Length: 487
Image (cartoon, rainbow, N blue to C red; front, side, top):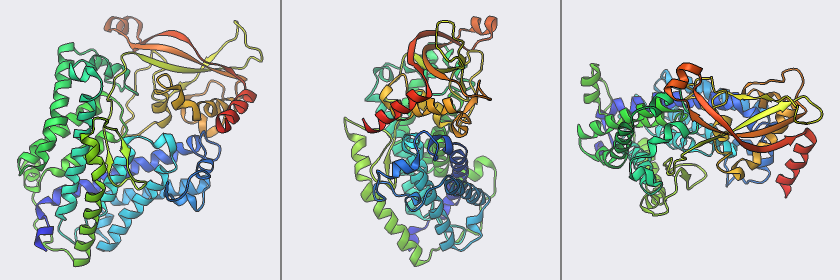
């Protein structure tokens, strides 16, 4: 059974296990702090209503057995605590079988959350965390040598993440092929970060270099992951550098960090020891028990079979991005930003206490934590933490149908000062009494020029496009909610 072991990948296993555990901590904390307003009993898209229309088979989740906000919170905080324990090495302090069960428990808890999270959990980083989290469950602990098959599956996963993202761009917007997409993207991405203004203001020739470098990193470099060392380590290092560039330029939840963890795990132990000047471990076990080897082989066989659809998707002219092909999210397709918006439109929500709306009505603006609003407020760094409502707000001007299920419930929450919903915002201009009306205005946003930033102290310039959502009262939101649910 020696062919199943890879002691030289001790470093890679360590990086994967501790790194994925850290991301789990973030994911569970993120869920715990935001779920009440998003999917809680008084949230915009309540779990109970969703589960009434879904079977366990189509959306496996422990919440099919029982749901309450307290139980959901207990699952989240238990997951966060267990993940934190795994970060500091709990898996290496328990027997091998117990370590596997602990990782599977984490995966099952987060799968339960994702499968009831609806549109708020519909993005690629959720599937990536679940697929990686399940893979980590079969990496073993310090009792056994790192298993070679799951370590190769790690490279296959990283290849799909990078190559899939590269292909979706080349097949998508023409600006990726003529190297001009970054003329716009730093400004129009879903949630810019504190350095996005500076990235946007780089000279255009450098933007073209950025795009060309991205194509190289995503379309050429991933093949090096399957080459012998040290070529594989060099390929992984290039991916790490490009992902850090993305971390600096915007907020993409934990997508980039998980990709960095996957890439770092490809670097073999001897290379890591030389680069980071650490001692190579001398007590790595050389063998594995037969039951564990059989389990690893069985898991690998399942992944190989389930890889057919993602592999077929890669070569398809109608490639789909961020798609899962099974309710367990075991093997998925990835990719992002196949098309780029050239201008930025933002929905700004406002409220008023006036009982009658007129031209003299005074409106007060709601401000979100991460999405652009106040033009004087510098974009904030939030990733790897993820602001789910802020991210979804970016889609509202692009696709009104995308926001139909939750935009009216959001307005209803503002009109009642629903605590879970209001907590998702940065400011509530009506802390004592809720407004009588809310409305939505659509603005065109652009980054300020350097002169405007220095003279006016504004990071953005905006101009009114028009009314997106006419003034709504509480009674009107209830009527519209019934129409959207049953119409």
